Image (tube, rainbow, N blue to C red):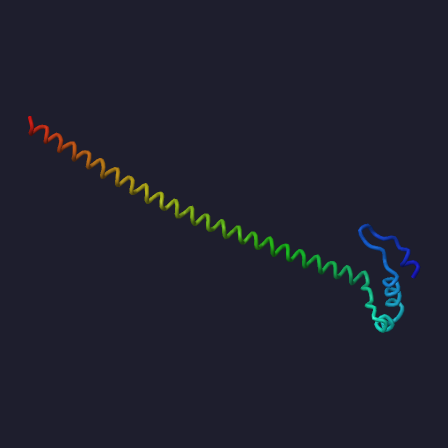
Length: 126
């Protein structure tokens, strides 16, 4: 028990309490009957705590991965929407360009007709 109590504490960890030391010693040397009878839960061994730690790390990694995947999906969706808007805009621009060309041709034809009319009108007035 003294050896457990006097073990050096790793940086960032708290010192082991007397209850924890007794719990560890009793769980190693006898059944947990005594601890259960006095209402003390046995301290998990370092293997189970490292197992719990690994499980928590895996769970945290899975949650982080899920969050990142969610952000990637959201960005992908936004990108697709932006591409669709760009395609619609380009299509509208092409249609507008065609309409502008048609309008310009019609205006040139009207100008040519007006010139002929004015030329005929000027010729008849002379």
